[in-house]
Image (cartoon, rainbow, N blue to C red; front, side):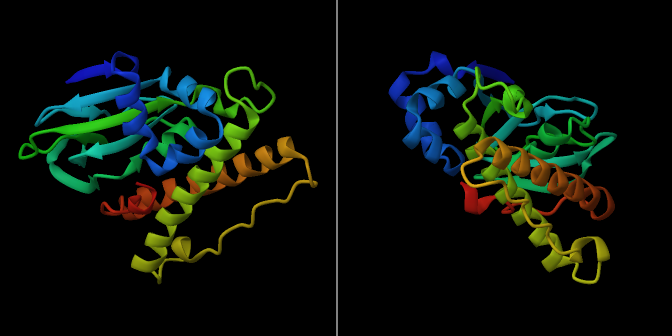
Length: 220
């Protein structure tokens, strides 16, 4: 596996690749300086057939974007047992990023895929609600809104696929409302909601297994 720090790419090429991702479009448009700051804490991975990209037991605060190719979610003890598939456009790693829990499965490149490109950003400072030195409050609000959108979409897939499962049928919790103009309160509310959804999705993943790919296609 080869890992290339994004800053090694020409600036225009890098900006074009990443700003095309729905997740970063609003940040790139509204705060270019913050956008380029996020790129400095990011990596672009080129993976080969058979590579194990993420492993059971690992723990990090990175969010991953599958830009090209396909990845398999596999049983760590037996990679021939494929539990789920990630396709181009998929966002993954959001549960571990939000909850801090260790990974329970391996992410593997299929043997038949010639090239896989993954972009990854380290969101370590996201949870530091009172510290805007590394990531602005507005940017963190944008990020949390995107994460909430992704988590809700994934849970909706479970609700559709398993309508008789009580865990999947639980109504969504409403986002707590902050006072008008209280951006800090809004941020705290979004974080609380994102943690709620991440915990629910983790329960669904554990009980029912990961959903197939296309879960994040609307966010590509």
